[in-house]
Length: 257
Length: 307
Image (cartoon, rainbow over all chains, first blue to last red; front, side):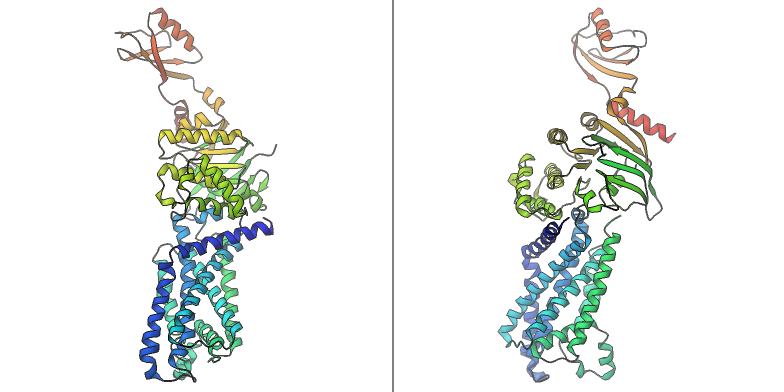
């Protein structure tokens, strides 16, 4: 395949993915928007005033970046894992496997689909947040790149889960028992400086913390962790997961007999 | 001329230790209509899976129009169109989109893929369904959709794994016509089927796989010529009570107007049998083969291989 043909193949997978989640927007876009709106109402509006300020911002303003990031993470992951496993389950992954499209384009196509949904939901949640809070954008480049890279990272993680999944249970286990706890404990609702020292150190092992803090730095200009460490951690995980994904696709694990 | 498909010493042992292929050597010439037959579990689908890159081989080589599947993977894969045994499209995608996307995976731009999709869907009687989700199609329509999908990138080698399974006779016949036209246009076709009548009607050459080995690879004509016995059923105009054998030609009266005739092809011809019946004053209204000839040979070969 020449470069033009490869671009066409990539574009085809991306379009297919975007159409897939757009067609079922009531299942893919709307629920995270409603859930996050509830977080804004309960934590921000009702409980927030009782908590007071955090790093000079209202509690509502403080949690907005974390909640946007949480929506980006869960939706990027969910899109790729459900689409990839769905393709395996229905057998239509074979449409790509029999074609000459290289594995790295299959990977790029699925991951781009995950990013598209992650960013779409992130944008929708951001819009909703404007109803409840003023949106600060201190560092637009940091906000955008941290969001994009985090979405990439969790799209890759979703693909790996999709490769190994053998049942619909398998695609919900990781989000329920790994992703959700890591996100909730990743500083979405609090600053780790509020934790006892031992828990602060344990929190540093949670990769989501670096993403939430990086994004919060982009939005509010404050972070518990230096921004360059956030970039380093995210890029490191992307490199690791992308390499592992390529290994799985090249070996045909979970997709070829 | 380079073979459309050249398989050398192809072996496959699955992770559970089951050896599905024990060294297959097979060559299919360009323009051929080739039947690959075998009982369930004989190794047909594994062979097709390896050719189409859905199954990893243990050893051996596969060349498609001279392109090695290991070292010239993209070129080799571009030559193949696959119609698998099971429906394997996204049932929630619209019919037209399935074809356009499939073209896209081969690097065909959407506008061109859309033109080809229109042509194929019209040819296969699915154009009216182009905007409907694939799950709404009937079984026969789904089979035709799989054929259309396999052709959208204009492959030189079309592999069909039981394409007419579960399809009614009318649609099956129309699919046969479509496949014959495709083959006449120059596309090499490899067909697996359990309908041996289908293989006999469509294919020029035949391979039979049994227990992971290719036990027969020859022309249909050569294979059928090995049948030394023919059995016909004659419907007689007037009823008769009895008829005696004529030498090695055996007559059996099923009912007063249905006569079964078995004879060795080397000893008799149909003309001689008709002459004999004429001499007896018997008039034949119609006649038919009692058994599918290929079916008999297939059973003999597979039984022979087991022994």
